[in-house]
Length: 495
Ligand SMILES: [Zn+2]
Image 1 (cartoon, helix red, strand yellow):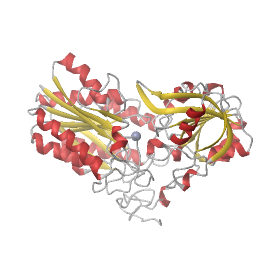
Image 2: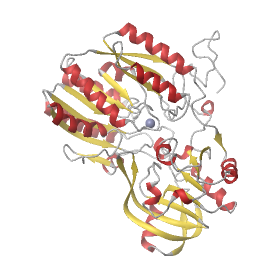
Image 3: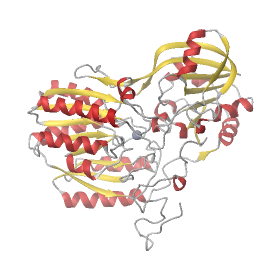
Image 4: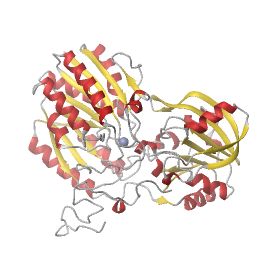
């Protein structure tokens, strides 16, 4: 039994100002066959780590391909995508014959000339291995589940949790499904129901927690092999955007179709209820100051590098400085130039520094202030569940009583270790501002007195009805009021 594994992943925000080029992959996560360390470096790379362990236990031969990924950003260059795609497909050709192919993907990668990179990659892999070899992929739930992907793959499995803390378990499920398929024990068949909506679903709180628990309990019974909630990714203006239910059965297509529709309609009924209230910066700061104890974590969620955005917005920090709010920590702001200045000045230095607010008008204006450099770290990291995430050279500075972490690799705030590795204890602060939409919760919830979500502006509005989409499928909620025509004819809303 020969299993080929490779990984190519990024999330493309077609509204974001930062292009994704080859260096975005090779300078971030790029490992040629056999070179990947024995711990996950990204969610998608967990597939390789799981398969390594399983190859020894289950006695199959693992053929490793390249594992590479870029942090979410704007549309990927054609050159970057085609170079990395052809590298992996060449490795697959060299590995033939294989009994199964597993790919660690994201599912929302868009390149110039390719709306659906994963569909293109999977279809080309199918051409290489033929119709009888099972192909599967792990996907981020913030993906576009396209017909091309579904036609080319036998099994697609999304992470169930948001924050995505379950990437190792899902990778294990995919390996099991592919091995069982290759051995002729099962015949996976996919059923999809399009919920015709765009929304955000946090699984750490109700009602989504209960929904995920219910679908998990259905797996392994009555021929159901796997169920995925495709959340969709609202930051892409592409033709297959949207929330979908995916059910994989053991060759029970009609049952799978019925279950996907039943669950999909149930999920549609939860629309608008699965994410938190968004506050203005001042509303968030007021509420944090009125809270007894701390820390209150403020998520600057529309400047989330994890959604492809810059991560250098200074809007909330400017409000804190203007209001004289101290006893706070902010991190991480992406500013390689300011990091370099801080490293040049050295720990303990006081200097006049310009930082943040550089990538786009929506980043706000830079902060110009007298700062103290409290710590500098080369090749700094933060934890994310069982993985270690590089943030590049980093610096901690103190400005008017506020500790600010500056990073040179643009990556969202996952975990309190981001602060601790730079000498700041976030649990001791009244207010902690993080750059993330949801993934910070796993790490920060245990120390947070409260968690608030702030809309401090960004390249696309938090109100999806105001996003200048041109190519997404219609009708779709919340742009259209009743896409399933439950209340009669579908109503196309005003944009
Ligand atoms: Zn995601």
